[in-house]
Length: 256
Image (cartoon, rainbow, N blue to C red; front, side, top):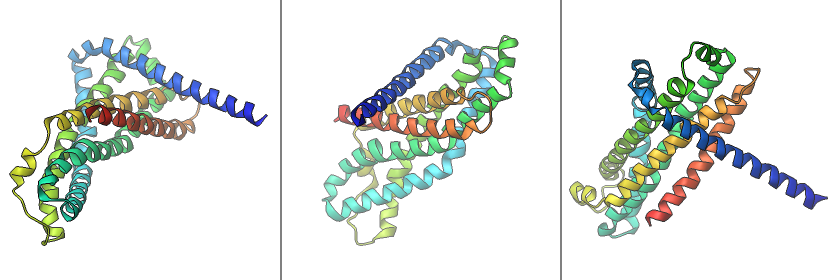
């Protein structure tokens, strides 16, 4: 009996995962078909608001997190590795691995949850039904602005966080321990492998797509009560994190 129960649980979990991925791909397809709606002033304005909320309003926490991580990685590297190796460590660990994950965590916590709650509230208040009655396409007005805004904001945040992680880490290590070996900041920046930078940009695009679509998908799942909002929001966060971790591993392994 225990074996059968385990198989049923595994089958149910597999169905949930498959359904989640299929719905995610369907939403992405709908968004790609509706990209032309960005030419509409209203859609363009909503996209800019999403970029502002996800990107510019997250500058302070992103700055603090990236500088702290840069100091941690570079100070530990200088203690245990020759100076010549530090550039490679900074390129791989800071630019390609640590900063993208930290940015992803912050964006999921701020913007991913906000989008889920926003879409769920719009559905419970019959705002989505009103859009349909008025002939305003959901895909153009709700889906596209949040997807495009999230992706663009995450890419900009990634570039910003990489720069502050490197520069802030470089100067911060001197404040942490004056006895650490010194080296020119130019050498640190020149040691960044372009392939690591492009891998980080690819991660930002994929993370933004996953987080925005998962948030919208779960926001649409509410049916009757506002009590469902915390439930779908927590599910959106967990599934976004899990899929982003899998994507991060796949990109890093492929990039070598």
